[in-house]
Image (cartoon, rainbow, N blue to C red; front, side, top):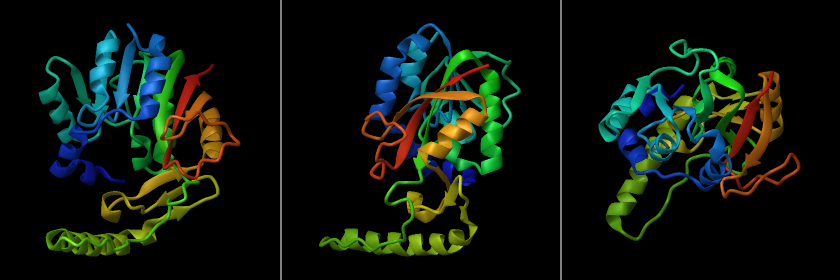
Length: 252
């Protein structure tokens, strides 16, 4: 849904400076044995935010991204590392059960619609070995600010205030363009949220429906984390977590 946005030079540059988030660090440390010396597929590798640690731990790292600009950025930063321009919905370049560990970081799965998401999950399951781990994050529909509208920010610095005004009107324009494309279902929603000044449509799901979705696709959810790194269960209050991290295992 948001391919053009992720191909922009400004977004590629911004992603270069991003670091691992707390839950990602905790998951990698806790499940290090599933990565060390194993074959790892890093879907949505972006500009290489997760590459450094995963390539050093694994014996066979492959980074995959839908944005060619992101892939080219990674190839420049990490010489000799395998990066492919590809699509989670069709990963026919990989064999069945090729990877021990698959990561789809930073809510990348939320940039495609519902039917394509299910196709992507089927492909991830196909390329994952039995008992292999699938780690990803997804926007939390229960988040208190999941639905919002553009707001003007104020600054006493004239130059900053000019920027705030421009940003506000850009957000208004984007919001008007995208709000009618939103989708609200019982199981999920596609929301025009605040990201990139309301320029995108993003998939949101609560943890109950996400666990069921994973189960329907052949995965067992073994852990969930909020953005601070707190472990969650089905009854946990999660309104302050913009997205949730899931650790799932492929079952027969």
